Amino acid sequence: MSQELIVITGASSGFGKEMAHLFSAKGHPLLLIGRRQEKMTEFHLPKTLVKQVDVSDRQGFAEAIQEAEKLYGPVDLLVNNAGQMLLGDVANQDPEEWSRMLDTNVLGTLNGISCVLAGMKERQRGTIVNVSSIAGFKAFGNHAAYCATKYGVHGLTETVRLEGAESNVRVLLISPGAAETELLNHTTNQEMKDGYHDWKETMGGVALDPLKVAESVAFMYEMPQSVSIRELVIAATKQDN
Picture 1 (cartoon, one colour):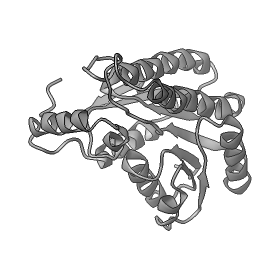
Picture 2 (cartoon, helix red, strand yellow):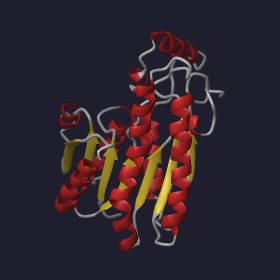
Picture 3 (cartoon, helix red, strand yellow):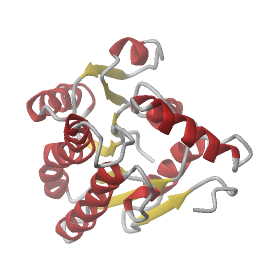
C-alpha cells in the first residue's frame, strides 16, 4: 500500500511510541504530537515531524497538521492516542484533575477529528482511530471522572462514524485494558497507585504489552478502506474484569 501521512498524538511513550516506531518501519511519514518533544526527537525516525502541542489547543493542533501536510501530503490516518488517567474518588478528588482529563481525553479527541475530517470526507478516504479504554464501557472504583471521559470517547466515536460513513471515512475505536505504560504515573494519590499495582499482581504482575496495541491499530488501518473494524477490545488474558 502507498505510504501516506500518519498523525499520532501522545507519541512520546506507551502506545504512541510503539505506533510511531511500527508505522515508521512500514515507511510512513509521521507527525508525532506530544508534550515531551525531546522524547519524540530521540526516536530519530525518518520522514518525521515532531511537534510539542497540547491537544486541547485546537489552533496549535491544526497548525501542526497543516505543516506536516505541506511536507508529506494529506493525513490518511489520525490516531487520537493522547490521554490522562487521574484516579480518585469523586468526593475527594481535586476538580482540576477532572478538567485535565476532560481537556485531553475528550476535547483533544474532538480537536483532532475536527482538524482532519473535512479533508478526509472531501477525498473520500481516511481513517481516524480513537484510543479509549475498557473503562469506556465498564465502571471501576476510583475511576469515575476517567470513565466519564472514556465513555464520552465511545459516544463521540460512534456518532462521528455515522457522519463519515457516507464519505467512505472510517472512524474506529480501540479499547485497551491495563497496560505497561506511563498512564498511571499521572495519578497523584499514592494509595490508589499502590492499589492499582496490587490489582496488576492478580494478572501475574505484567499487564498488556503496548506493542500489541500498536500492532492492533496497524491491523485495523491496513484493512481495505471498505472494511471498518468499528471497535476492538484488547487486554491481557489474565485480566478478568
